[in-house]
Length: 430
Image (cartoon, rainbow, N blue to C red; front, top):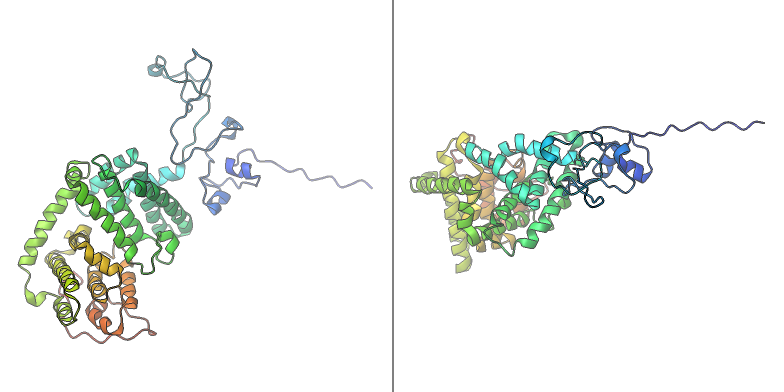
């Protein structure tokens, strides 16, 4: 009996290099095949297998510039991206370039996609001020070109932006965001103890990008948030403390550097905030009850003064927001409170001081006003719920007003919060 002939297997010669190295079948989907998407690795589909030598490797995100290799002495090199058989451009014929193999260099299309998205979309969602939009569109990417960790922060935030609006590719972009940010964070952390005039702008903008990353990250995954804490509050507050230390160390250099327009705008809005606070009627102050609770709390004198100062700074922020329409508000009008309070207060929050946590709960009312921004969506409620969980039954009475103002309903398993008898804050819904 004649044995059955084996069905010939048609080999593909156009699959990606990653699948070929793993000896698995590539479905050749573009721009990334299914296998590479599944394993969250860069797909070098755009590299032609015919032009890849056995020892060549895929260009990495951090090193995708043209590579040059040696040839016998006396010969003139050509860029690796120059196709063999084509004449060199006239301007390059007389250049004394190192010699190269005639091989194309792969572009990391995922990184280019993320950078493009940041430049045309993400950067425009971070501020209302046209000058600051331009700063994030132009100055910040320029800092990224000369500082790898800043570029990785840019790509991480852009990836979260795309994950937010492309749910069908959410897991893929979340993995890109986490990998990029972790890589940038390692570099930034290593140089943070040595802040200089040369690196202060890059470190400061990376801390700002990290804040956006932390707020916009998935709130059901401590790993992707880069969070090791148990509160969901202390971890991103520590980021602000890092930014504050950079400010105190190199403020003059920051003002004179590429981020100068950001600090000039901040100076103007801070002065406006102080003026609004002076004209803020006491009857419109939503923190009166909070101040009364603190006065009768019996805390030690140092904690009292620290918390009292934090309430007064928060009152200024409420005054500024009350006087502005929603179209005039900037994120800096809200986050400035975290830069104005004493570092000791942030330490009290991170240490779960009941009084400090209750004050932070009132700050969540301001955060809720930024809920329309994709990177803030849901953060205020999440943080307020964390505050609620950490407070004892007596101090939960302190945050009755914030709970009602943001419209949050505590879980039925938790203690019910008594109704608040005070007047609602007048700017809500503006």
